Image 1 (cartoon, rainbow, N blue to C red):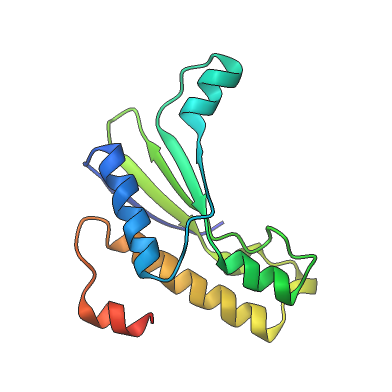
Image 2: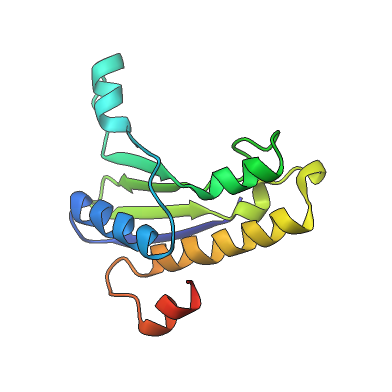
Length: 138
């Protein structure tokens, strides 16, 4: 599976705030955030590194077009802290999640747009998006 991924030497919380801001800038809205570290601690009493993900409203459009799609077109961002202290932000390539039965022109176009926006959100973690990016993605 292809991922858009970058590593940063920044505090986890700062990266989390920046990717959330970048996602909003790209037209995404965070539907849910899963704090794996906290969940594993509460449910399993296991210490785990910082690790979280978020999902967006693009899923709504995909599900509205193809009700059986559900999570086949995830707009997920995964943020994880490695043992080295680096924070990695990754997003999958939405086009790779399709089953052949779901490959309609509309959904391929939607997945392509989501991929472009996710890649831009990840790429701009440690810098402010340029005006060109802002205008291109609106």
